[in-house]
Each structure stands twice: as structure tokens, then as C-alpha cells.
Image (cartoon, rainbow, N blue to C red; front, side, top):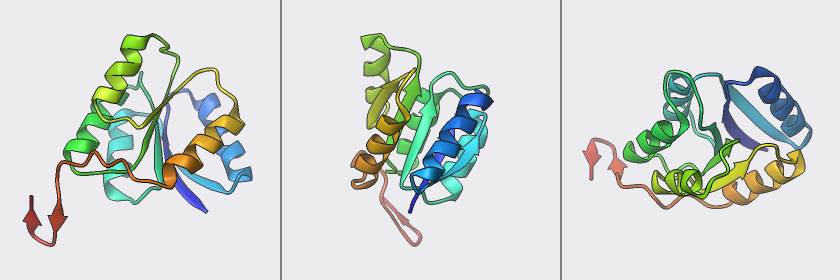
Length: 134
């Protein structure tokens, strides 16, 4: 069973996603703000993280960038209504692994999460072992 984190400020959409993914054997922790999502992402192990771009308190780009800077290589899937190429490129520049534009099919979301969970991001710039940080 996959363990994921959804960071989305639209509660109705988040509820729909969480309920559907549960049917697909994907468990979701949920945060409605970027700062809450960051705390969950840094404090737990996830197979994948889903981030909205427009989040209160800490936007999805900044959250993803911070995760990568902290050495977190959990695959990140951006879920957003921003469909311009510039928005997608900005997401990839900060370390997102995939980008899905709203509205999307829930079956596609589940398939992308499974594909992402099978590999790690590979974008980590920090290595840690006990007290050693490189």
C-alpha cells in the first residue's frame, strides 16, 4: 500500500482525491497549507507527495524547493490549474518530478503516483548518515 501526502487548499477536491485513492489502496495524509505540508513531509516517510502550487502560508514551489534543499528525495507531483509552459518549467526547476494540470482524471493521478513511487527523485543535494551531513 502506498503512503502519500496531499497538500491542497481546496478541501472539496482534497476529500475527493483522498477518498478515491483510498479505493486504489493509496493512503493519504492531508494538509491544507504549505507550512503544514512541509512539517508532515519532513516528519514522515512518503512514497510520493502531491502539491498544489497556490497554497496559503507557503506556496508549492517554495515547499518543493525546501524539501530538495533539506535532502528529501520523495517524488513530487504538482497538481495545479496553472497550465502555461513557464509554470511547468518553474516547477521542474525547483525539483518536481511530474506535473498534472487540473482538472484531471483520478485514474491518471493514481497511475502517476504508482509510477513515481517506484523510483526516487534523484535530486537530493544533501546526504546524511547519523551526525554526518554532506
